[in-house]
Image (cartoon, rainbow, N blue to C red):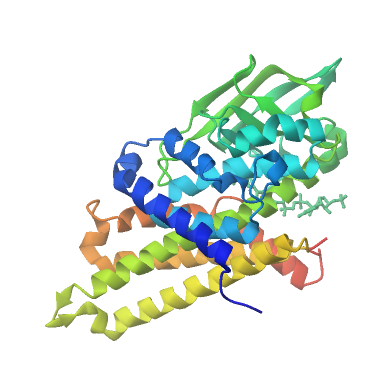
Length: 384
Ligand code: GRA
């Protein structure tokens, strides 16, 4: 067992950190305040190969692996949590096509998504289908050489800026979850429209919207995998995006810890640095331990993925724990900063707002606990 990042991973970490600190940090507050989606930065991430980390070289990837995905996402989220969403929106569909698409689909879609020539997204959630994926109602009906898509999706990251979307819909509702299928949809074609959602608490620079499909004709060649494989494909996709989501949480937790340490060493009250008070030390110690533990869990899940071994359980454990850690760390950072943490003058309030998403997205904390507990109790194996 080796706990050090190898030379390649260290170089990737360095490149991601440099990009985040030099190109993201200067405008992060403005981007957050103005709810600005930075397509230019996403395209730069494409140029730097960030979206190619779990994609083979023949489709413009770098194939550096899932641990590198964790490393890159952490560095991005440490500076701006909103930007780590782009990792999932590009990599989720691209990796899914690599795993389940045919050769023609891989060639047609993957390189353009990996280089961010196309902004992409994936669409699972509906007004009445959040945690309960199989409750979705969007329908795809085969008519000749195309499927006709009808329905709507909500809480879709990138809905209003995406060029392509991986959309999950029922081809045969009678078969319940075995009747769901996956499609690549051109977002600029007739029958597709989008609408931004109301303002969110955080992740302001990551657009979130609704998608509407009104007799939208999707060519038969855009079906990913076979009809009825959609639920399985969706679970496999989420199993990857949960890893990156957890890495985002660790990035924000690290930002909270770094900011807290720095402030605790500056702020003087009662004649001493507040870092010298044990109650502050208690919070700092817990932030350090939890951040470390969450990162190691993510590295473990990423390593299993890189080894091609089952990892649903380990990914859920890592994603769940990272979400708890960032909630705790951002809470502590706010307490340590006191009134300044409550002020928009300092980044801590943004960390706090952004932190809250991690217990919700990519399978809520409760869904991860359900997967973990049912596996432990022997009711439903997570790694299958
Ligand atoms: O036996 P079978 O052939 O019927 O198959 C069952 C099972 O073996 C069937 O699906 C199979 N299956 C899987 N196959 C491969 C289940 N899980 C997996 C898997 N991981 N891999 C039905 O299984 P089931 O367990 O009876 O299904 P269920 O109870 O309906 O659902 C299970 C569960 C609750 C875990 C699932 O629905 C789930 O994960 N829900 C959470 C949904 C979620 O994570 N949504 C996230 C939306 S996207 C998002 O948040 C984007 C945010 C963007 C960002 O910020 O990153």
